[in-house]
Amino acid sequence: MKLEVIILAAGQGKRMKSPLPKVLHALAGTPLLEHVIRTAQGLEPAAIHVVIGHGSEQVQKALAHYDINWVIQEDQLGTGHAVLQALPYISGGGVILVLYGDVPLIRLSTLQNLVQHAQAGPALLTAKLANPIGYGRVLRDAHGALVAVVEDKDATPAEREVQEVNTGLVAAPRGDFLRYLPCVKRDNQQGEYYLPDILSLAVANGKAVSSCTAESELEVLGVNDRVQLNQVEREYQRRLAEQLMREGVNIADPARLDIRGSLSCGADVSIDINVVFEGTVTLGDNITVGPNCVLSDVSVADGSIIHPMSHLQQVVIGKDCSVGPYARLRAGTILSDGARIGNFVETKKASIGPGSKINHLSYIGDCDLGVEVNIGAGTITCNYDGLNKHKTDIGNGVFVGSNSTLVAPLQIHEQGFVAAGSTITKSIAKGELAVSRARQRNVEGWVRPGRRDTKD
Ligand code: UD1
Ligand code: MG
Image 1: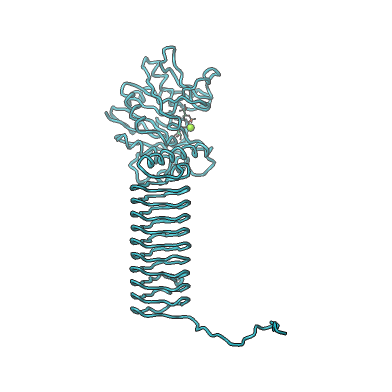
Image 2: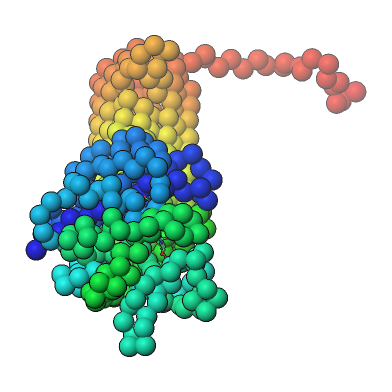
């Protein structure tokens, strides 16, 4: 059976109070509309048509990597009008499913069920809501058969009592859309072409309209303002956290974890509170991530520990490494097995060899470190001369004393030793000691100016 999907996304989203088109607001770091497109793809439809209007160029640009037929709705004259704009692009038989770009938590199984119902005729996804205000209400006859949907603004007080609402998601054979949609009128409170009016038109034509009910309220929650955006965000995060816990991940508090991308975990991973994962993050076995860490496009191999308050971005971490607390590892940092990065250390484009240590207060950028290197507290690689970036190469077993300044380009060959407090501008040969600081002079019998002799 052929299936085509139309996603409605032309609305402005006034209540978001933002110049950004509503469907581009992020849920778990991904635009709302992208969630709907991904779920729709799960149905393997022949085509996905997205109706856009407000900020159409911005929306198309943001989702240019998807195979979408973009349909422009110049004036937003209602949901029925929006679907009508897409119909000319759909040919042949089969079923058309209409989704909303601002209902992102809809489940694939719910949609599969709705499409199944639509084989025989129009089918509507409904939900029972404790507070149905604002939604279209589902009207049924004495036998329980669906007869119409009435919008909140058009409903009588008795109709407003109905708790079963239109979720907005409709599926029907293409023929039914072609037959009934052009007959929909705009003689209602809002002067709009209402999509659900095709249902009462079908019923008037002797056609049965079926319905299915959504599993949960949140699945069909539409995002109209920031409060609802937050509701779907928290629900989405709760689902992700639950799934991870079922897969064996130890999560300190599922309400204080945010995954804005994909996270995969090995066995015995522990994630403390307030950790944010962005992009693609892969954690191996026996990993601990301490509280208040941000990991963005990071992979961590078995047995490593990320201590609290650390920020890691585009970083690869080997086995049995230790990072932080308070470490900032920037793009291009690679830690080999057993490396250690301590507090207040910043690294960028730095390859840290096996067993090497940078334990305190340092900046190491554009730098290669060999095996078992020790970088003392307060070491700075001066990688930038105001015009270009330069590299520092540090060989195996090198010891850099505290408070050293390494002016790149520079090579410190293996077993080289930099005395504390040195400013190094020339390369150091294998095993050499480099001292580059003023020699200490102690002045005997010196009296501090203006100081009275305490013996007087
Ligand atoms: C709609 C339904 C209502 C249902 C509710 C569920 C109609 C007439 N009403 O109301 O029965 O209970 O959804 O959330 O269908 N859109 C366009 N072009 C337009 C108008 C809307 O693309 O001309 C898009 C919007 O961007 C949005 C969706 O359609 O994604 C729904 O529009 P919205 O204005 O939010 O409809 P509701 O008033 O919420
Ligand atoms: Mg709405």
